Amino acid sequence: MGADTIILTVATIVGLYMAANIGANDLANAMGTSVGSRALTLKQAVVISIVANLLGAI
Image 1 (cartoon, rainbow, N blue to C red):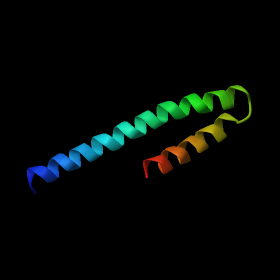
Image 2: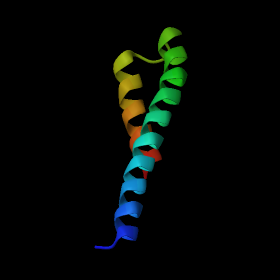
Image 3: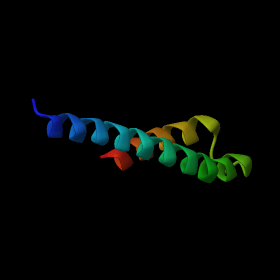
């Protein structure tokens, strides 16, 4: 395995990790208003957040 492959692999892992964290932060802001206004229960918001984060990572 060459150095280029290692660098690409590490960069991909770090990029996916950062994207998941940024998405989770922004999604929490969106779900907070929905739960606060009682449009969604906390359980519904968590399920929607999990699905959205998984689909966003793909």
